[in-house]
Length: 223
Length: 339
Image (cartoon, rainbow over all chains, first blue to last red):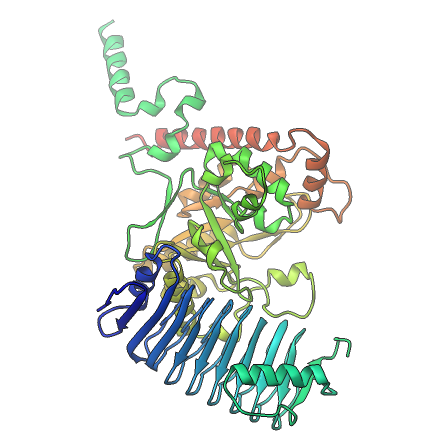
């Protein structure tokens, strides 16, 4: 049950649904909530959907599909795995996943940072519109599908059709891709790129120099 | 004499039972549409969010998509909607109220009372603020998402389901996330240009949509006659209504087609459509003729708005005429239905 103590909420997902959780937070009437602790997350869908103005969210367990859609203005840490469309339409803030992510990670995100310490499934960063995504492991096929702007950093390997239909933004990859879409081309890694990679990895708490990466941008984008 | 007086009393009695048939001015009987004729079942369209009593009422059962499809300027949209406001016509599109608040001299305008159906493209992020202010949400399942061909007007209407929602569960979850984001208060709908109508409608009903808007005709130019018919109107309505009945759901069917007079619209409603688009009717009633083949309804109206003092007054007269026509049809149908 919810435990209201000033600006801190604790939710047990055994007893409250994601929709009810959101209603409790919306009743706060614009007051910033310092922390939300969610327990018993066992892959339920829509967890954290629509969360805004919450300084810190901690989820014990795994999140199902469409977790933390439209998330904004806060920091969230998830101890387990996440399902499809995690961080869909993310607006701002930081989402950290300690496990793996399934398909369409960070789809249509317009801002903020999504960091996944494990691997991500197909179509990571699909239609990305400005958010930054860091995947420490590998990604599946069609990563960066239809990206418009933003950054996708892949610490491991990528599947088929990397950057298919990409129209803007940048993909950085450290390993190899099974196949690279003709919509993107490799470009020289410049100092601003290294700085950007370093900064995003630092924000994601991932240690790396950022030098081993290769940069890919749209074939129609000026170098 | 007796027989005449009997006839009069019978007539009076009938008129008491059917007040709409009294010889009143037509406009004073305008509520025929909302009250209904036999038994008082209104013709107004009610859209409810699933398993709740939250929703909106389209009364009369009209909606316009000109605000999202015609490329109207914000000024033209507001002027058009202000003219349509007395009629309670629902409109589809992004919130104009958000833009208003940014202006210094923002005042409450009539159109802000109209029910707004927020349109959401497949490759568009969920704008929580815009969705929060909407009376209903409509997912646009037309067009090719992530298309590389810019401004392809035909491609926009191509029926297409991208990989993300190709399977039933994914689409159901997308509906679910919109339901959560809207607090479970908004009816969630889909806009489709159906190909295999029965199968498409069943699929969308199973996905959990509360209402479906079927695009039967697509208009490309200024003239309402210049349209691309994607499917037969009668067949589309018949098949979609059958699909709803077979599924046992309460999903409502909204139709956007090239209907340019009240009789066609009334027939469409009688066949089972819950609400109808008045876009083709408005395009047909426009105050200016076709200039060049490339001009669109939006481009001409935008220019017209900039030059004429009350540019959308024609819409009000057109709607008045439409309601008269529909009322005539309703009353006439009531007479036909008389035992």
